[in-house]
Image (cartoon, rainbow, N blue to C red; front, side):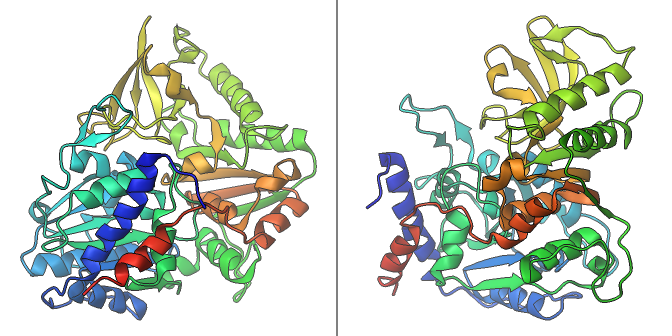
Length: 463
């Protein structure tokens, strides 16, 4: 027996019912556009061309992004117009950059045929009705107009926002493609939406595992694969023995040395005179407490960083200064920022500050958000923050401390999520016992849910 608030109890069962409405449809078969797709990637495109709903997941370097692009092209060639949605503004911006990038091996996507935004912006956030219930402009009585919807980074989507989106989609006319990485940590918000859909085994599901040429030289990509498939880490390719140039493993038992190393990397690696490049280097840690937790690391990095910006104004709003790195810890759909969005302070006033959260965030999607006294309580310094808070973000360089002080938090999914945040370089500062704990602890933090039961219940009723 599970104890729910009424809101979550209703959302869970209704979500299962709505998913089965997609499964019950028999859509027209489209001509698949494979492009340069290989192996299982082609199976995913086939499912998208013949099914009303499907799941696509896979490792970094497995061609998931290219597969999504070929699915969009398949829909586009059929004259369909649709939406690609992500849980955060930064994830939506990243999807837009990839989808519309020039690639001579792929057909160009027509921007007039697809809208890319956050989920909450697509379904139109409205203020609460006073009962702490989030309301949206589009719902069961006012469906969004789309021939298809692709949910990207669905592993980050909590139950309530997923439920809100599904209510706004007409399963009779709109195809649904749900994409994510099931090896990552679960969503910050409550629910187990993505993994429950997979575990139900009633939805066509393609899991891309093979790493292709473009990822074979990457230590980051290969170590994600090594961890999940073999339970190991390595600074060199296990087949060719060639050392990776984009990953460093630094072993130490000294917490003092670890903090000094981390501060060094974070404040010198890509620091410009105005701090504009600092956001590309990020320290993420398993927990907040201890000598190598985010509280200590945040202060240590911030103090050195501020000293290096000696000529910058010392004016403060609360404890925030110009060029401070910050993180938002509460969903603010009215401001178009969500829990985990990070930014840089670009202006400080007596009673407010301006934060650039990056393209895709903010009411105008230009990244700019004014933070006043009413909204500042959910804003924190972000020179170091937890791996959980980093979900959905990517950084040019990630600094990752792994120590026994966070032993109970260490797991394979946590480690995988952390290392896959790095785009160009990864530095792991670790104790041997801690990294072994990560690689051996395969138990995903359990979340109580009846979603799979409800999915099966309504699947029996599908005709």
